[in-house]
Image 1 (cartoon, one colour):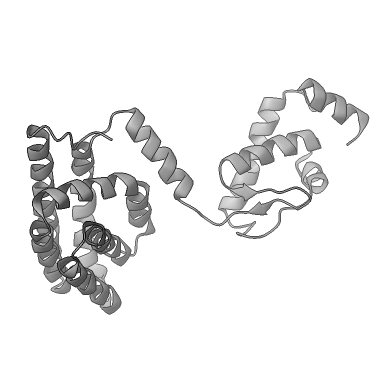
Image 2 (tube, one colour):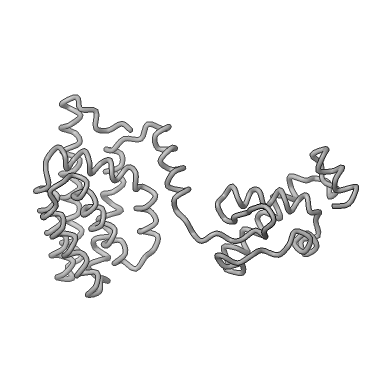
Length: 248
C-alpha cells in the first residue's frame, strides 16, 4: 500500500473519490463474475493488486468490496490466504429469512397459505417428471412415516417426502424455496403431527404418491391441496384450544 492509499484508508476516504459508488460498482462486477461461474466455487480470487489494476481502482476499494462479498457469503477469507469463492450454501439465507419471519410476526397459518399453491404445483409437476428413483424414494418415505414411532422420526420422514417431490420436478428453485422455509416447515409438522397423530399425514402422502406414480398431475395437485387443508384445520383447532400454535 502506498502513502496515499494508507492515508485514504485511515481517513475513510479513497484516493479514487466517490468511494461508495466505486465500491458498489466493483462489488456488483465481482458478484456478477462469481454468479456467472467465471470464478468457480473453491477457486482463489486474483490478488488484491491484480483486482485493483483490472478494475482501475485502489486496493482500499477492493478490500471494501471483498468485505461485502464475505458478508454475503460469496467468498471466504482468512489471514495470509487468498480469498476463495464459497460453494452455494442456503444456510445463511435460511437463518435470515427465519429471523425476518419471526420479527414480522408471520404465523404457521400464513405458511400454509403459501404452501398451498407452491406445493400443489410441485406435486403436479412431480407427477409429470418423476423418474423411477424418485418414485422409489417417495415410496420409502411414505413407508418410513408409517413405521416411525417417535415424533422426530415422523417429522424427518415427512420433510423427506416433500423434499423428494420438489427434487422430482427437476426445478432447483422449488428445492431452494422449501429449504428457505425449513424452520417454519419443521415447526408446523411438529405441531400438527403431535396434535393429530400420523394417520392424517400418512393418508395424504399415500394419495399424493399414488397420483404421482400414476402420472396424474391433477390428482396429485388435488391430494396435496387436501393435505394442506387438513394441516390448516389442525392449526386452527390448536389455536382455538389456546395452544398458540401459530407464533414462533
